[in-house]
Image 1 (cartoon, rainbow, N blue to C red):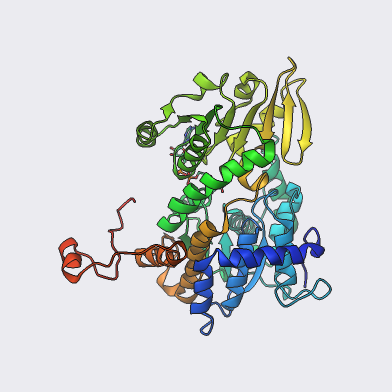
Image 2 (tube, helix red, strand yellow):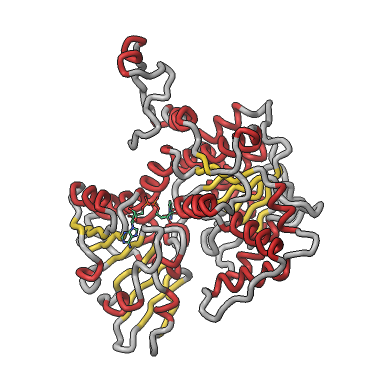
Amino acid sequence: MDFKVADLALADFGRREIRLAEHEMPGLMAVRREYADSRPLAGAKIMGSLHMTIQTAVLIETLVALGADVRWVSCNIFSTQDHAAAAVVVGPEGTVDAPKGVPVFAWKGETLEEYWWCTDQALRWPDGTGPNMILDDGGDATLLVHKGAEYEKAGAVPSPSEDDPEEWKIILDLLRRTVTDEGRWTAVASAIKGVTEETTTGVHRLYEMFKAGTLLFPAINVNDSVTKSKFDNKYGCRHSVIDGLNRATDVLIGGKVAVICGYGDVGKGCADALRGQGARVIVTEIDPICALQAAMDGFQVTVLEDVVETADIFVTTTGNFDIITADHMSRMKHNAIVSNIGHFDNEIDMAGLAKIPGIVKEEVKPQVHTWTFPDGHQIIVLAEGRLMNLGCATGHPSFVMSNSFTNQVIAQIELFTKTEQYPIGVYVLPKHLDEKVARLHLDALGVKLTKLTKTQAEYIGVDIEGPYKPDHYRY
Ligand code: NAI
């Protein structure tokens, strides 16, 4: 088996944590039981690009239990948990000397070149073919396949310009080496039945491609299942934003002034968490609805310029770019903590920070750096501006990821087994499946659900078995 991880000897530790996680992931385990015999993913060749954590290990082994042939990479250079990657490669039945699990190409602390090499490896099956399904988080695997096919059609990979970001130059270089006259990427793209996308930022890319007419295969937007974005993005970040801050700095949060940029699902979870720790939380927003929500939830809402010099902790959650600029950072107070929990690292202008004349970067420990300005004052930047909950801590806990990943598995089954029902486009799962995911998680929390009577159901115009809300309901 071909694979590349940090250290296979970590597999036992990973397996012990996977067993604990399985208990906290009732949705995924229920799906395993439900489909144990029918194995609806038999014949599926799934390439996954999603943070290689313990929770993801349970997802991968669920896909395998349902019959899929899987290859995996992380979707961020810092987010891999090396013991999880090792355990997945070894597999429940294998040993370190004779691994029998899934080929994983991921380790914590990849370079960007290594990151894109890993993505390419996971798209190559040993028999020379590619996947027939993608499970993506942030859209990097989907992007590589689309760009490869686009440049093969055009007959050339464009040369990067001086001003292109470093990462884009690396992608173009990889494509220049992997585009073939026979049309390798075109063949990969045409074999893919569909992609299921995990996060807001990846979904945004998919809708843009669909609008531009460039999307090559159908996609299910897993993020906008209610049981994903209203749980993982919100309650997951409510947990892991604090974990990231604590493990990175152990600074007392109570009493500090914290600025949360963006009050969407992630921002709501982060603001709630920091308030829970006793921070005085300030929110920035561009959307009047979210700004009003923040105000009515009791947060001060203002612009970054007003608080940049006085706040202690900054967390960007926008999925947008250039939120905290180099100029902002130079004006922050000594040891202000700067972090991002959005998908990509461009929310904070790290490139601009590095270009400030005389600035000195020093590593406190991996993924925690001080940046000292020429006047002697410094700031603390977490995870080099990449998502801090996965870079500095271990991301979301199992229970919330069970909701997200049960949606992923159901979406993979939908696209793989009912391909003809999904012409090229971007879809969300039907509401009865969203409700099913929630239902699978109630018992573990001791939730008792009230059952509608027949007359009550008729009165509010729903079926006794659901769905209970119209599609436009917002929760
Ligand atoms: P969302 O769209 O619900 O929220 C983003 C908010 O930021 C919106 O309300 C928007 O109006 C606001 N915003 C945009 N530009 C802004 C600006 N210049 N200043 C202030 N506010 C601005 O998106 P969601 O679901 O909250 O996701 C945010 C990001 O987090 C995405 O990149 C997503 O992929 C990522 N994500 C990260 C997770 C993690 O574990 N680190 C988990 C889930 C999502």
